[in-house]
Length: 211
Image 1: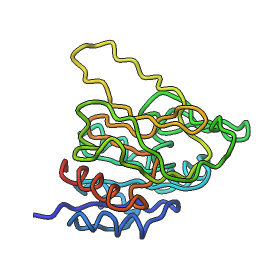
Image 2: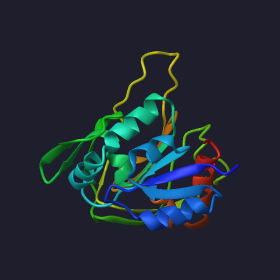
Image 3: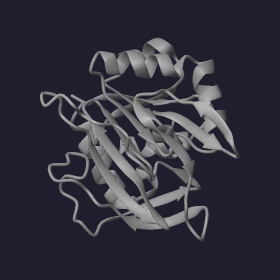
């Protein structure tokens, strides 16, 4: 039976390309900001482009941070893409202005430390062992990035040995930064699976298969 996925519409993101990419996995996809529909879906995909502050403002206008928080509290899958990943962190800093994020993970989204910004192009990703997100993909697989900000330090420390540590993938553009995170029901990528051809399609299929 096909899974039901909501591509969350909060005024930011490549909604139709994300919709088409997830539909390629065989899932039923709805693009909406409706609270109940987003809560009831098997999976919630949160895209995002542009400024951190604008994305958070749009998200809160449709109670998106509540939807994300409630879904995760109940173990319901959520996946963030690009700025949709960044807003899951504690804060974003752009042009010296700090904006609170969803605070699912500690850490700061800030400017990339690189000679050329924005970072626009294809990169390989350093993936930890046992990743479900990148299952079946070769180490030299490339994904498409386009962004000027990222998370350069992973700040979450697991002190309870009974809690499984998130799997954090990295890549480098001038300086290493977080490329993807798998944390139980919460997955996120800085790159764009929906713009990454067959590799992105395989990754999204891996996600839908966990729903």
